Length: 293
Image (cartoon, rainbow, N blue to C red; front, side, top):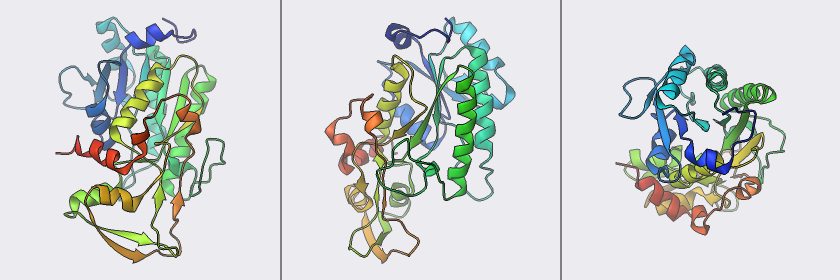
């Protein structure tokens, strides 16, 4: 089945999805919530894979991927690339570009027609109601690195591989807020701005994220170059913390802090049918708790 011709909905429904980065924080959460009955998924690991998973390091070439597909007698319909380097002391963020190049080259060689490339809303820099057409102006190294990674995707898309960059907002439970709730016995500190309110951000729950990814994997027709990934309605970080039963310690926001950083997800909502509760803090926390030991 050639990636040059469009896959039908039946083709895509039958084809499994390859999920790279399955051992990462977001990958683990998404995998736990993945709708396997609707969309079969195979997680990828670089070492010690569980039964049914793919042992493959993209940096070592496409051979293991190609051989896996040959053994199964079936190609993956979509590769969801959640693997990447996140900010942290001593971490080389330029590896995001290098890993994307290796993964996309392997997908091309393996005949996988579609790749969903996990980027970040950090490529935009701060702003409100940010659409996919907003000019990118990252204000940190992570956003700049992800923008460089997206450029790799653009080059492969020009060669015929359908690459869609997912500009992901905050995944509830994988972000600093709820991680700090878990680590600090339910106590967190939040900025308070001049109007007495705290930060407003675009979030998505882990199960909603898995459902969105599955929808995009099944989509018939070509996906856009980039998609904002978050629930349609932004939430205050205070409301999310309260839904997690956290004790909030307020502090005056520093002059450099941004109160509102939100994504416009109209384009995504035209492709995926969100439920009203997907934008509520209580549902986001419930989805997080469902995969938190």
